[in-house]
Amino acid sequence: MAAYFGSRLRKGAATTAVAAVAVAALSASQAPGVTVDDSGRQTTGAQPAADASSADGGATGNSPYYTDLPPLKSPSPAPTIGSPASQSEAEAGIPATVLDAYKKAEAALREAKPGCNLPWQLLAAIGNVESGQARGGRVDADGTTISKILGPQLDGNGFALIQDTDNGAYDGNSSYDQAVGPMQFIPSTWEWAGRDGNDDGKKDPNNVYDAALAAGHYLCRYDWDLSSQGDLDRAILSYNNSTEYLNTVLSWLEYYRKGTHEIPDGTGTIPSGRSDGDTGTSPETTPPAPRTPDRGPSRPGKPGGGTSPKPTPPPSTPDQPSTPPTPTDTVDHLEDAGTAKLTATAGEAFTQKISTRAETKAGKTVAKVRVRFTITGDTDTTFEGGESVATIATNSSGVAVAPALQAGEKTGDVTVRASVVGRTVSPVLYTATVTERAADALARTTDAAQTATPSGEFADQVEVKATYKGAVADKVAVTATLVTSADDATVIDKGPYFKDADGKIVRTLTGLVTDENGLLKLPKLYADDTTGTFLLRVTTAGGATLTVELTVAAAETPPADTTPSTSPSTTPSTSPSPSA
Image (tube, rainbow, N blue to C red):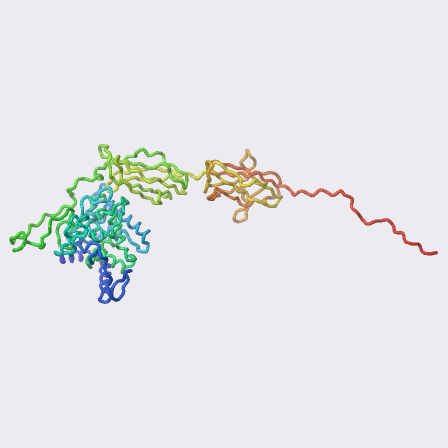
C-alpha cells in the first residue's frame, strides 16, 4: 500500500504541494511538549483527553479510507447534456443529493457556528475519502444510502480494537464496532455527534443529510476556525488521525475549491485505492462475514489451511450497480399538477403554491422523488423562510408541492424552475407575477382648510392615509400633482408649488411612499403671487384618488373705525382782564 500511495502522491504532487507544507508544519507543531487545548490552540503540558466515545480514533475509529488523489487536470464545467463525460469530469462531479446535503450542512453551520467558517468543499473532500461520495451517490430521495456502507469490523486485526458499543443497532455487529454510513462514523461517536439534517425526526448515520451535518458539527466542536490552516489541519486529523489522511483530504479540498458540478445520483466514480491495501470496493455495502485474523494468503495452521494464496477477485465494476433502480431512475418527465395562476402584491405572500408531478415514460406517477424548485432571475422574491431553492420529495401521488412564495418589492414576472434531483429531465417552468402595492382609498387625516397669502406658504402640510379593502396600505407609491381643475388634469403653471431638493419650483411629485401605517405627509406647499382657488390631486397605485382644495388670497384689511374721536378742547380760555 505504501508503494501505491507513494506513486499516487507523485502523480498528484502538483496539486498537493500546499497540503504537504501544511502537514510538515503541523508535524512540527506536535513535537513533544506541544499539545492542543480544548479550544484547539497550541499549549504546553499534558495532552487533553479525547472525546470519551472516540477511543482516540476520531470520528471513524481510524478506519480505512480511500487514498485516490485528484486528477492533475483542474476540474472542468459540467459536460453538455448528451455528451459523454471524461474521467476527469466524472471525478470532479458530485452526485446531486450528496452535494445538496453538503451545502445545506454548510448553511446550517454558518448560522449555528459562524466562527467556524466551515466550507462545504471540506465535507465533500471527507465524503469522497471516506465513502466515494456515498458510493457514487447511491441514495434514495430522502438521502439514505440504498444499502448500508460499512467499514471493516474494528477487531484489532490490522485495525483499532473497538468492541461493540451499540449492540449492533447501527452496524449490525454485536461483537465489534464498524464505521457506518457515507461519513463513516463509528457508533460510539455517532451516539453523541449524530444530527437530524433532513428534519425527519431521526438521526441516521446512513442518511447523507444527517451524516453531513454531524460531520460539520464534529469538525467545529472545539471552536476551531477552519479558515485558519492550523485549525483546519487539527480538525481533519481529529476525524481520522493520520498524516496521509490529512494530506489526501487537503488535496480533494483544494480540488473542489477550484470547481465542481452536479451529476445525477448513482453515476459518480468510486475510488479504488484503500489505505488498508484492500483492492476491492470497501467500505462494504453489506454486513461482513466474520473476519479471520490473517489478511493475506492462507498459511499453515490458520483457518482455511493450505499454502495456496487466496484467488484474486475480479476487477470491480462500480458503474454497473446490481441494486434495483431507485424511484428517481424511473422518472421520464415532470408535469405541472394543476398550479393556479401565481400572482401577489409586492411584499405579500402568494396564496397559490406550485405543484409538480413526476411520471414514468408510461405516465405512471412516481413517489419519493426529490424535486428541486429554484427561483431564477433578478428578483427578491423567495420561498417562505427567505430561500431561493427548495427541495421537496414527491408524495404517494407523485406530486411535490413547493413552499409558498413570498413576493419581494421588485415588481414584474418571476420564473421558478422545477427539476429532478439526481436525474436529467426537462424542467417545468412557472411564471409568478408580482404587482405593485395598491390602495383603493385615500383620506386626509385632518379637515383644516389649506390657505396661504400671495408669495407666502401654507401653514399646514397635507397628510393622507391609504387603505386597501379597509386595511392599512403600507409602502404604496403615491403621486401628488397640482392640476388645473377637477375635469382637467393639466399641471398648472401658476399658483401653489412644491420645492425640490435644490429649491426649484415643482408642481408634480413622484416616488412618494406611504409608511408602515399607511400614512404620508406631503412636503410643504408655497404660493406665488397668483390668487385664487387651486386643486391638489393625490393618487396611488390601485386607483385611489383624493382632491384637496387650496386657496390663495390677500390678507383681509381691517374695516375703518367710524367712532368720533375725543380731541382736546378748542374753546378759548377766559382769563381775568387786566384791572383798569
